[in-house]
Amino acid sequence: MTDAKRSTASTIRKIIAAVILVPLAVIIIAFAVANRQIVTVSLDPFSAQHPAASLTLPLFALVIVLLITGVLIGGIAAWLRQSKWRRTARRLEREIADLHIEMEELKRTAGIPAAGVSAPAAPAQRLQLRPPTV
Image 1 (tube, rainbow, N blue to C red):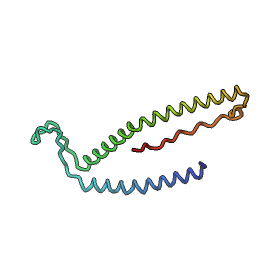
Image 2: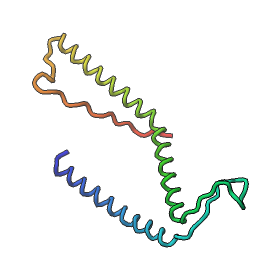
Image 3: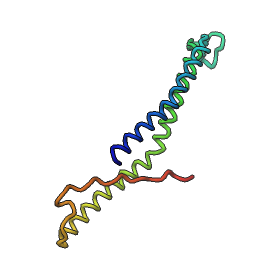
């Protein structure tokens, strides 16, 4: 990718991020201003009148903390689900590197000059796996 294409893609990415993040920030701020009342969250399932553990905080803080917690749990779950594909990609990259070494050795024994003699070989492209189909 040329520098011009890269800078254009970067500019477009920044514009799209701004178009999404600015309204989202306005909505979050409006939600926080509209929901400032204090709520008590009971963490004791046995005593509703006198809970052993409770938390008192503004409603918007509770909602934002729960949203952040949900995003973190979802991200961790997705990361764990993708571990099989990351492991497969690492294994295939090792196999490709081994095959390149074997191919260069075979070329050397056959008398064919190696492709990387005059210039260092470009790094192998990363394997692109399609998402699993269910």
